[in-house]
Length: 101
Image (cartoon, rainbow, N blue to C red):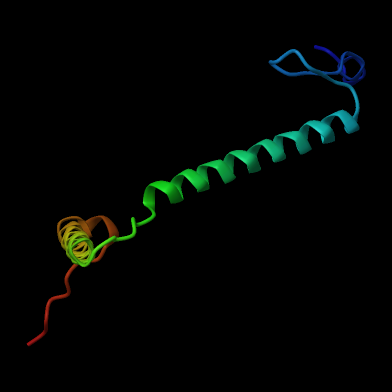
């Protein structure tokens, strides 16, 4: 079993083959990874907003159609949640209470 001194002498090796011998190397890699994660997060956020953003209506007909579509989607979501709660309430102990006479 290698000792702590032999591990420190070897340095830490990543799967990419990069060696980390000092705390500065580790901190530099950590900073680089944080920056990469932040860039990816910003890119995902931008793409999500492009997909989910409502498209502006160019005429009154499209405005009414979008309003009806959004209303139907909201009602459909409400009915779905209502049915799921009714059918699977036993999973969350949301059992219906019996009325006492």
